[in-house]
Length: 331
Image 1 (cartoon, one colour):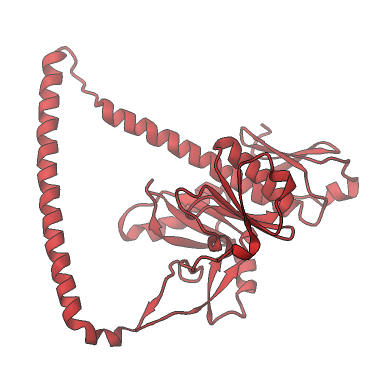
Image 2 (tube, rainbow, N blue to C red):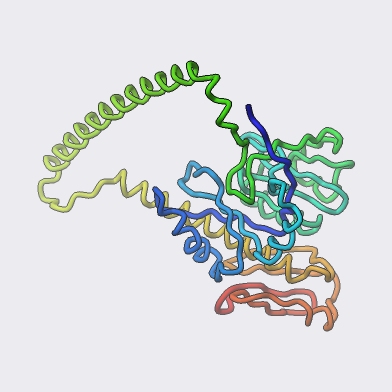
């Protein structure tokens, strides 16, 4: 018999996602804080880290990052609930593209299994512009009316009443989700479970045998390739495997692309916290690690003095209508 906890949705604008490469085996939990700290270029002592339960196809594990003080106060009176980021309520699949949910001025976006963000219309429109500039994808929108400022994109518009939240599968309290089993009830299913384990054992033996045969075949092909290489190029003593080189270069470019995306999301989170409570920027620009915010009208000196960012991020006002947010030396 299965029982499930009562779920609550966590406001996703108060968290960010980071994809990190962790070692295999049990050592990945010890390496998690250092991997996230390297991504954020800041201390993780004041952050609440929750790893997702699975590794994606690129070998990366996504981690939910929340300010520890905000997390401790937000969930203090919700001890009997499981908590899931509210962007995961939006439906998503490989063919979906981008899903948006508009409720008043609050917008939730989801464009991956663990990728998404939430904020006001201006902020999410700017983020959507950046996402569409990288890859033009269909946008499924759940709203009471079609957003006028999004008409430049291909929209699959759905009424807000048609939206059905996805079943929560990830618990921010436990780093996993789904359901909890009552193991005392499993004795009634002893025979089916025995048969199931037997089938799994047969499948495992067959898979192991197939893997061994494939390994032997690969070893033979490698020997033949090396022999042909030596015969064709007898003067070359240092052998280079072009397949391995190509794979290494591809992994390097993918890592650089993911690092750029993670830096952009971190900069957007910093900018969102910095201008919270002030007049919203109407345009964003991201180039070479620098996030530029533009306003349609002059920002008063008193308002500009309130806009602050935390280290290692820096803020520089170019004019009364433009400021730059960046890390380290001025880009």
